[in-house]
Length: 90
Image (cartoon, rainbow, N blue to C red; front, side, top):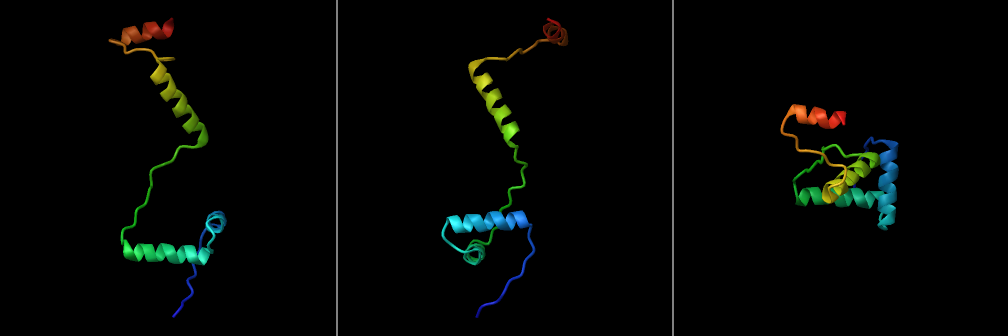
């Protein structure tokens, strides 16, 4: 027996999922059915709710990591607030 499932989703989300399914050679219906069967066989719902950095932030993080590795653009550590102030004033 087959049933129809009606859901509401953002237009952008639907479009992206359709492209993903098509890229993998399956229909959106097949993708939803695979996902639902997977959930039945593995009844754990994992949600990644951690905020994801945008492209600009990722680029900045990469630059900072590179600077840390090479010791470039790094100051300190400072033993006192006065030492920090002196460094910032220079």
